[in-house]
Length: 83
Image (cartoon, rainbow, N blue to C red):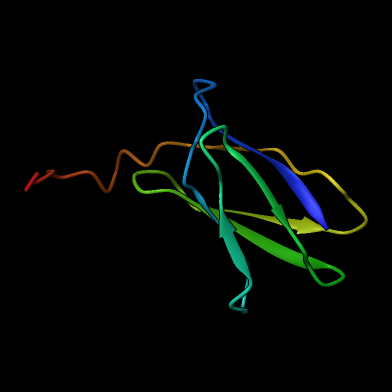
């Protein structure tokens, strides 16, 4: 099991960010406090993503906690359409 929190570079909580084990369907989303808990296989690679932010990958060796800071992706934001 691994758990942690996801933040932005401005220390904002990233609620509903996707946390997934790379190459599998194992995953979850962060709660309203930016926290997640996930059962992972040994030497798993976690992919953490959020709309408008760069996807980050981290290797989980023997870590039980993995807090993540996501960086805003200003290159991909061309326009936003609200319906």
